Every structure is written in C-alpha cells, then in structure tokens.
Length: 115
Length: 117
Image 1: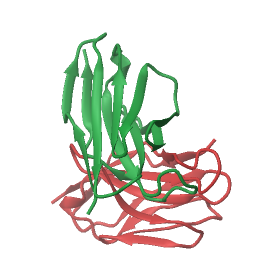
Image 2: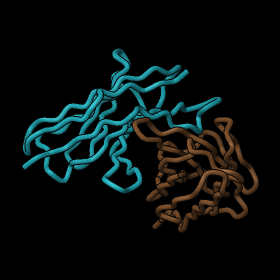
Image 3: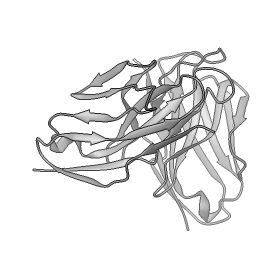
Image 4: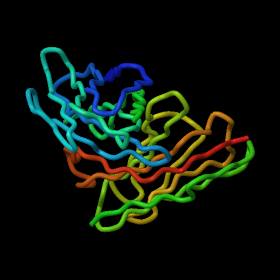
C-alpha cells in the first residue's frame, strides 16, 4: 500500500539556520505530494504541494521538489524563524482509482527554532 | 471565503459514554468531507469520508460512525467510547464532491482533542 516516511524528530535549529526535512514515499502511479504544517494546538494547514514530477512547490520561504526518480519530496528553507516552530507532515494522494480520496500522511516531524 | 468549524475544541469523556463531534463548512457547496484521527506519537489516519449527503465511506473498522445529515455538516459519533478513542480529531473538506478525481487540496478544521478516561 501507499506509505510516507519522514525523518524522525524532533529537530532543533537556531534562528536563521538552514532546514531540511526528508520525505520519501511509496505509491503506485503518480501521486500528488503535499507538505502540511500544524502549529501548536491547531489543525493542519497546507504549506505547499506538487502534482507531477519535477514540480517545485513553494510558500513562505519553504520549497520542495517532486523527485520521481528518488521518490522524494524533501522540505527545505534557507533561513528558519522562531515562528516556523511547528509539526510538519508530508503526505501523498493518489490521483485516481481506489484510495484517491485518501491522504496518506507521514508521522510528522516536530521543528523547534530557538532564538 | 470558505471556513470550517469544529466543536467542541476539547472534550473529556468517561469510557462507555457516547460521543458526538460536529464539523460544518461555510462558503462552499457539495464539498467532500473527511474525518481524521491523530493519535499521540502517530500520524493522521483517515476514518471516514463523504462525497454527498448520506454517503459515508469508512476506511477503518472501529466503534465510531459518521453521518452527513446536511450538505455542509459532518458528524462523528460513538455509542460507547473506548480508551483507545483518545486523540485529536480533525475534519477536512475538499472541492468537487461526488466527482472523480477529487480536488488535490484538503482544508482542515481546528480539531477536537478528545480524552477518554
């Protein structure tokens, strides 16, 4: 079945450090890929997405590139801020067929940014 | 603009008691609706989804049930809660209810934190 594997946290960085959160996936066909962010005590917000190979999703300084050859969708940011402290979820969705309504999530990576 | 509401925000219930969590969406028509559960230390698990009024699909067997009495209302229920039902319950919606393929993006509500004692 479909699965998403994220690097385990927690991740602690100093402000202005470079961030990478690794995400790899297993799925048939060509799924859509997402990064969601969950701030403390809140629901999930879509951060960025990519729907086909080599697409780059970007938002709020975060980027991720859909790499079909390595089945990866790593999240990066050049300079993190304290306000980026949150839990980040990588997810995929099949684009057709059984299970296409379902988002398959990774377990989440907690990021803490210290001043 | 579209908004999604969930209530209550937090809930503490004894084992064996009933449950009703409500989710409503505003600003859109005929959305797909979803219930997810986020258990401590685990990712999100899809529990139910609905593509229209009265149409519910269950992804995992459990003692929970869902109903969609109105186009933009989605209810999660249980007759008797178990300790293992504790978690953070998230409702989500996406565009294009009832059609294939569903919209890529799902929008999540603020969640309900349920503690079963």
